[in-house]
Length: 245
Image (cartoon, rainbow, N blue to C red; front, side):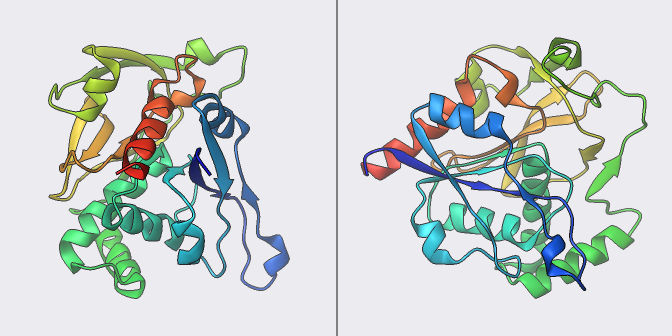
């Protein structure tokens, strides 16, 4: 297959331990639409017991972590896999938050072990001085209910503060105006990631892996609402580059 296969992680909407038939996995149409427009093939990744078989990950040339409301083990599994196998990964909204959490916890535990990972995750959440994410006030510039009629009203200005970054190379300008839909903000980053975008209230909007030879990028805003498709085009380009190496 000549086209780039992008493994898309689902949103996990609902689960009860006593009824496995209540599990809900959702793929948002706009993400897959943008991947197809960029020349890629979206490939939905479904977990079993919150883990995605490596055989499925091996079939993918790149990865996309959608926005959503719940973190699952497969988010951190795929991030770890993408970094170690030099496959491009784009995290959007919850996807960026997952990257930030991964970065902090891996600094503390070294290699990914999911039992240790979740123990450390719970420990850090319980410590008031070491929050992983912080809930923002209900009234803020970042949280909107989005539909096709009001998407422009849901935009705010984001500053690209690191010119030596992949995201600056993609946009090639100091500010962008993006659709926003999130009620939590990233508090800390581990040593292997850096913040490259911030909003006017200093909320982090874009992060990257510090080794630019790997395309591991997270954005808090929603580029799937942009018709220019810049981020998705770059994700596919990075996949092509690595596939041809």
